[in-house]
Image (cartoon, rainbow, N blue to C red; front, side, top):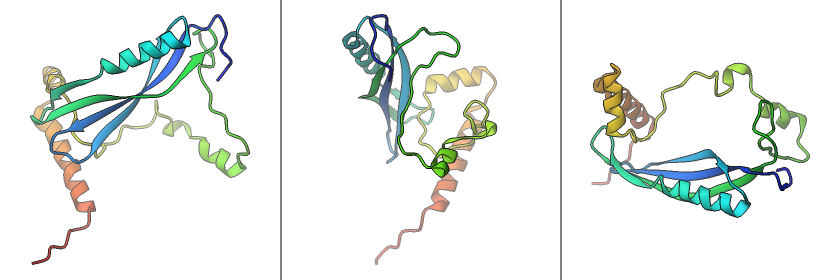
Length: 168
């Protein structure tokens, strides 16, 4: 990260948020990148923690299960040492002694970049809030279609797991 200058007023905070879904042994962890405006690193830290704590809540998902959202802490907090304008460097990662092969592995073709890559169905626990499902229904997406996708993912997941042997 660039050195802290007196002009710095923007920071990037990685917030770690855990979703715990009733009845599902798997959790879902999001690492959310937030832009923070502050007059000092300490103020940025305080604001980032407050922002994270506002994530804490409990709600009911579209299948009726309780979902608990818990802010676990900060993964990182870095300064943006420059103006927020087109082309400005916001952050960087430095690696030393990278082989040509590893360097090639870091690069992605256009179609694999997040903005261009197709969204694929994922096998994740259902943490969709009931309130969002109602909005989707208002936009013409049926609950049945959303649930069918979730059931299909669960069946695929169950088929890929080896059967447990049971002693009698």
